[in-house]
Image 1 (cartoon, rainbow, N blue to C red):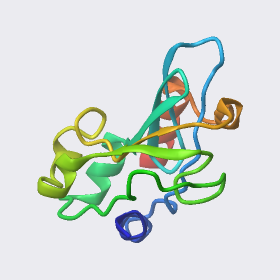
Image 2 (cartoon, rainbow, N blue to C red; image 1 turned 30 degrees about the vertical axis):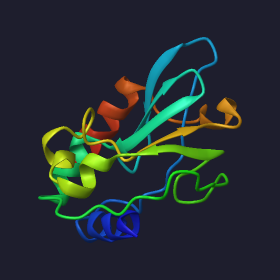
Image 3 (tube, helix red, strand yellow; image 1 turned 180 degrees about the vertical axis):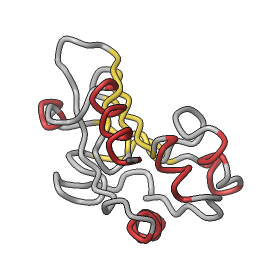
Image 4 (cartoon, one colour; image 1 turned 135 degrees about the horizontal axis):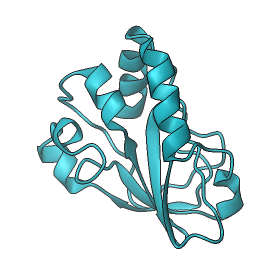
Length: 140
């Protein structure tokens, strides 16, 4: 799977393994949270959009292949895509144009959309300020 390939590439460049863990604040209708391994999840209600950050795509270099789960695949917390119920959509654009990850990591280069079973599973992730600090520390 591409997620494992991406994880190996990140690890080879000094980053941690991709581990999809998500965060959500119940009071926010729309929020973006980050993992220390440079993934993001943007939540709107219980729907999450997951991908890698600009920091990750810069570390990876040119993304030439992305393999995504099928719509309807289910995951449990701790699985490669974290605490989720089912995949609602997979980006068809990445199959034909994987370099979208490099061009639009935080917008058009998303990997999957999913519905979280329990939005509180994502509470431990970093907000934008904490993630920026994490990236600055990692660069030094």
